[in-house]
Amino acid sequence: MSITQTIFSRNIVSMNDLRRNLAEAIELANESPVAVLNHNKPAAYLISATAYKEMLEQIEDAELTKVVKARVGGKTVKEANIKLK
Image 1: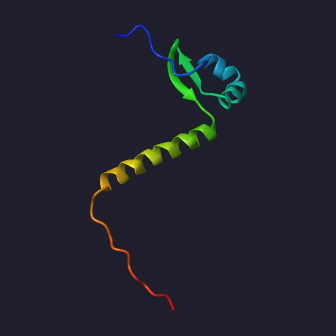
Image 2: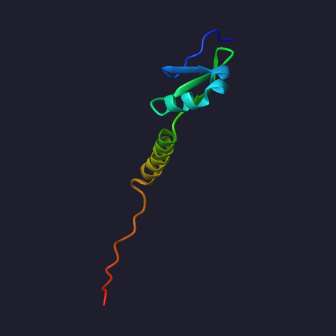
Image 3: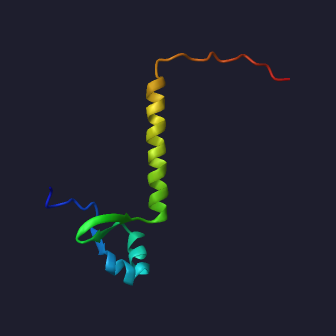
């Protein structure tokens, strides 16, 4: 059992403080992630909608990179010589 846990944020808020002042926690999350602690242990992270969207885009880019790397050196399709009228 680990006594310490890493908190991946400079900003923290307790569950009680989050309930009391959600608007302030959301405002703080617009600047950088906020760790939400439950019994002094990280239970969740609060991030802005913009940061979440960027994170999803980075995940998608990483997945596409894996596909591209897997296809390198594989079969190719010859360029069609199509004449348009």
